[in-house]
Image 1 (tube, helix red, strand yellow):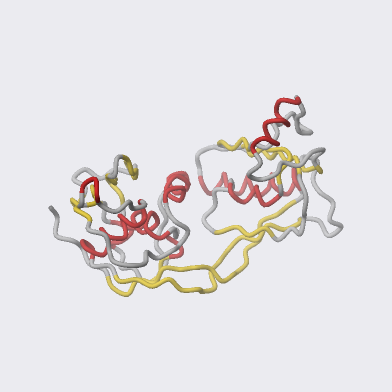
Image 2 (image 1 turned 90 degrees about the vertical axis):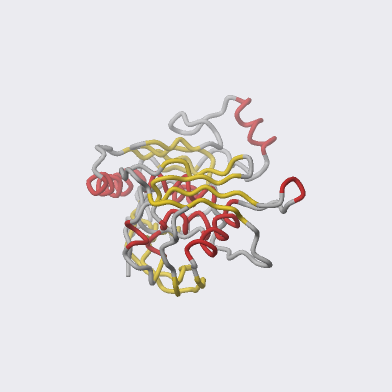
Length: 270
């Protein structure tokens, strides 16, 4: 069954914490955890951070914990009972072992909590899932007015080269700062970067794959009305993408990693 995803903005933060869909290997770590049903449920997930060797989150559905542990969004979780998306949990977990204990990443800690407290048994599999394919909008391949070949190309990971570009005073075709992306409500803008950079900043409910066939560095700016209505704003973004960049997002399917839940149970609160 498909289960509703948490806020797309929350997901952006969560995914930066998680490893990309890799199941932990070796002996399970010893993790001491406190897990309780949230007393006062509201719409906001609080925390979901890992500091000083302690993981904390509150008011979080299990979909958030699964995302942090395995790097998959809610629409790539299969076989989950309804309570996984609806029940909210307060969780605190730390590794037992003191200074001489193992050094663990946040995903390993959360995986241990899920195994020990929620009795989670899962498998990662490849399955065809809905995606959005980023493609050229026009048959003649003509790009939109706000997407042009860049006069310079930022080399990924070469921070010295990028710093020199910034210090040189060069800018993108629309005044963009080199090698950085401005991404906020209603705007995505960058210069000297590949088209594939776009897919990281579209907040939609599916994985996006770059199928434009465009190579090299580009300057791009796309703006749209952001009203806070997720459906309306996504439609406005799709329209702006076509009109301003000459690109489109089309529904497609592709093999993706999915997390198959074999068994899971509510924990005894402590």
